[in-house]
Amino acid sequence: MRLNASGGRDTARVLHLRTDPVRNDLRQQEAALESVNTALLHPLNPDDMAVDVARAGEAAMDERWSVGGTKKAPRGLWHAMDHGTGAVVVYVFGRRTDEGLLPLTGLREPVKLTRCYTDSWGAYTRHLDPAAHKPGKHNTQTIARQHLT
Image 1 (tube, rainbow, N blue to C red):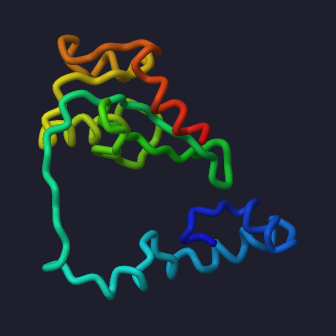
Image 2: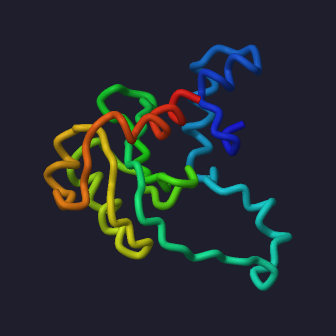
């Protein structure tokens, strides 16, 4: 269930257990857990895979947050979705700070993001070029809807 992104509460509910034993078990197994389903990757042959590299152009950027264990240490996913196709172009994991956004701004260059649509959170206005940044809700509805889905 962890490989399928089920949280501790979700796992406890499905298995009809209390949340404390599930969390304790996950903490004990944390070192052995992998964030990639390696059993799925083994049969893949890299020579048979096709890689499509394209320029994204415009993207909506947003952050998505979750609390893991304690509210003092929230975990977040920063990502940019292609404005035309809705495909995730780049993403990073980090905290909701200016330093958490900086790796994402560096990843914009290889995919040639020329315009970024974001909400009006201050880190975006501080670290994105004003000529290529358009804050507001009009162009970020799709990425915000993905969070709710």
